[in-house]
Image 1: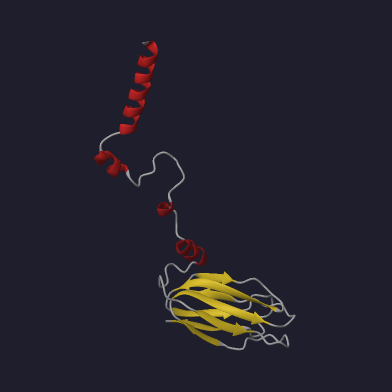
Image 2: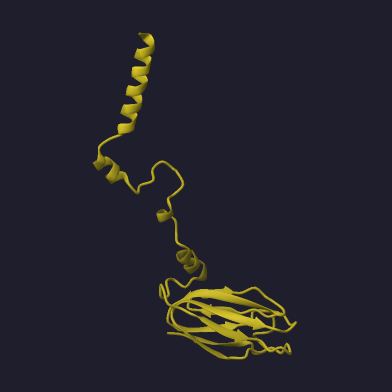
Length: 157
């Protein structure tokens, strides 16, 4: 008799704990995180928002954007193959091809943006930023290179 009373009490306890509350309470509390648990994916910032915050671009175009090509000369001279670039607003990437043994990188600045790529020799690198329409400067951030003329204008529409 005692054993069946304990079993009944355990089953009753599990059934009551499983009920929890009305469906209105569950719906009302959905999405709130008061337990201190790890946020759900919908509560964490998106990769785009994180990139925007890091670049200082502040929500350029949401989507859009594009990749533009830039190169340094194979002889190692301090210039780019272009002094003007055009791109659509949004996530803009400048791909730099540096075939020489002279170190080069590419950076974008202007309108609150200040992003740089890695410096490379005989390799490729790129920089990406979320850009609003406007005019930006791209340049080589290796000391002395910008002053020698490795810069240009990036127009974002």
